[in-house]
Image 1 (cartoon, rainbow, N blue to C red):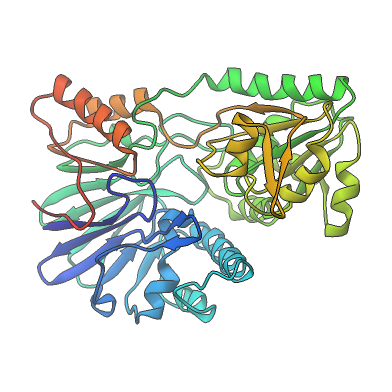
Image 2: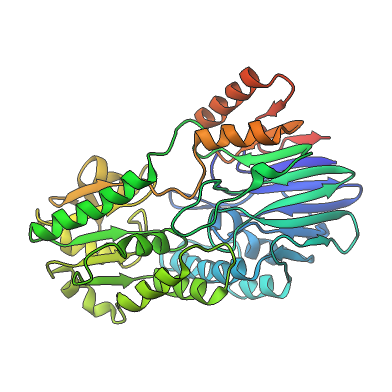
Length: 429
């Protein structure tokens, strides 16, 4: 068996791992990486037409965004994924395509290639064992605890057990049942993410209480709170937490979060937590239908606005920010990682907001809380100690995070062979 990394090796973005067994080739994920001025696609990936299958772990574009590009290059193989993952992926791909066109970025595909992806799908259900059409790989999709529809993928290849965790969370959240990957035994090769390999998440209870307290302080002080959210997972998590707010406080919901929440509510995904509370909140919130209303809503006092995007890079949250950042009574409450160069990072660190070629000072209070859907350093360590794989491949992380986990493993278990692959590297097992 050969394993080749076409992305997410010593980086976060464009996840794409090739597996070769005999003369057959498969991919685990096919994502993109957003960079200044455009998008990066998986590297050193050729003869797309000769691929025999793709395993799609979840909908986030850093794992799914390259699928239309592959279709454009004559992909001709099944794509295995859960039904909910595709429904969410389809929405994200359509949105991303139109956003790139608006920004005059030329995608490596045309819109009809998104439809071609759908034609190649083979839906799977959690926990059931399948075999690829050529009989080379037995596989199961297991709950990853990351986002609705998402999965870790357990494979049996050439008599070896391989677990690709993809993005994973082994601690339950308000939205998701935790992954129980740590219960797996006899794993020969473990390929896992290390987004937070060098840090431990703050206590979730503290983050939730901090969010609610900030909103209450804001409302009491005569202001309104704007909560930028990521559409998949984070927006639903935040809605569930906001159920603890006084019911007399109006909550407005805008952006992609509306469609995505509706999809999740209709999915009957067995690993989604608190679906009843989410449903109740989706009915309780005020859905913003008319974009022309946004600036007027931003001027209201005593309200909460939940809107995409989570890093304040696009979507309706831009319009709300324009109308709210100049008022010292208002709060901007960030709910996740803010990448360097994003408005969210700039608002939090420098109190500056960039829009329409203007650098605007932010007078509103800016708060940030961690509601990550990835597992943290302590959970990563625990997973390795429980599974004890023969070979451990660390990816989907910055160098510091990867090296921190590698050092921990080498100091605590001399028998595990640890690898930090480079893009293009071929590994044989």
